[in-house]
Each structure stands twice: as structure tokens, then as C-alpha cells.
Length: 242
Ligand SMILES: [Zn+2]
Ligand SMILES: [Zn+2]
Image 1 (cartoon, rainbow, N blue to C red):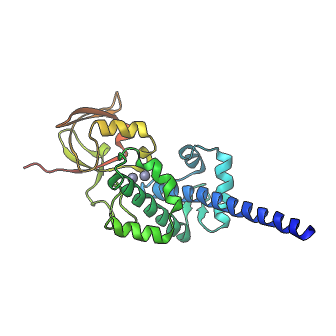
Image 2 (cartoon, rainbow, N blue to C red):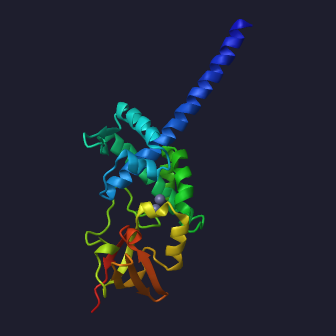
Image 3 (cartoon, rainbow, N blue to C red):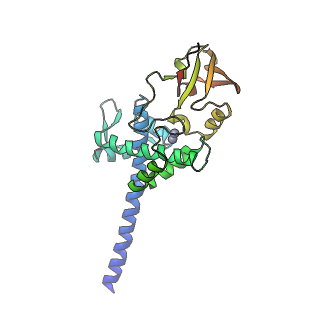
């Protein structure tokens, strides 16, 4: 009887350990993905940035980063800047691949609007085994970009891609990528969708207004105005008119 109780308790503890470990790895995966995205966007990653983007408190971020540092996934510089180690980078690329692949599948196969697939993909990306990833990539014909134009790890945007903030009035541009940071807000994504500001569509830069800190565009679907902080996360390619 004693032994049966003991083993029953042991199996509950084992279950809880596995549960905690899997929850823990999902949190770590979120951190790795965000660090990867910030690095790709050329932005410095500090605990406060992670706390804002992950909607958590700086002490929680601090504790997680210490754990990740111990596991050899991240390095923390004297300036408090956090970066991925080689191992962290490899894991992060794998998650980014699963994320983009999930978005592509949800959008192009299941028909979920491009402006909301990011949120669904954030859940799906943690539940994919290597076999599922491989078969899904094969099924989707190995896409190179997510529906927002983000290149898969290993792929890149054309070299002449610039931020909308680097354009000049009068330029005709084609949208190449909506930055990952903008995908976090479905409301904002819906506004971009309403103005047809999506990869592959062309817009003319009409005006940049410093006073209002906004940039005006014009397309065949009508005019639109974007604040600077949104425009700097939209990437375009100049269309040369003859
Ligand atoms: Zn996304
Ligand atoms: Zn995306």
C-alpha cells in the first residue's frame, strides 16, 4: 500500500515536472523569437524592450534571461544588451521558421485573413514536431516569405529594400514587408489592410509632415496617412517609372 501511494505520488510529480518544463520551454521560445526579430531589425535588445513587447514585468524578464544565460542561449553585455549565442540563434531560427510557415499555412491554405494569422501562429509554432514542419514545408512548396513579407531564415529581402521613412515625396514604391512588431496589433493590421498597404501593392509617397510626424501615400485604392513610428516598420522597394 505504502509503495503504491509512493509511486502514485511520484507519477504526479513526474507529470507536473513535464508540464512545467513544457510551459517553460514555450516561454523561452517566445523570448528567443523576439530576440531574433529584434536582431534582424537591427534593434538593440534590453530587458525593458523585452518586457514591453512581451507584456510582462522587467523582474520576470530578468529572471528568465538569467535562466537562458545559464542554459547557454543568450549573452548579456556590460551595457545590459542581450544577444543570442550561436546555440540560441539556431533554436531561434527554427522557431522563426515554424512561425512563418504557420502563418503561410493559416493564410494561404486555411484562408484566415493575413492581418490576424500572426496571433494564431504564435500558438501553433510551439506545437509542431520536426516531422510536421518538414511535411508542411513540402506541402506548401517551401515558401520563402510569410504573408507579411518577412523572409524565412536563410532567405533575405532584396538589397534595395528601404524603410518607408527613407523614401522621398514623389517616389513610387512597392510594399515588401510589414515589420514583425506591427503584426502584434490586429487593429493596426486591419487599418493597413483597409488601405491595401500589403506586400506586392504599389503606393506613391505624397508628403512627409514633420509637424504631424506622418507620411501620406496615394494608391489606386485611395489616399492613406501613416504615423512615422508605423512607417519606419514598413519596408518598400522603389518602383522606377519610365
Ligand atoms: Zn508573425
Ligand atoms: Zn509574418
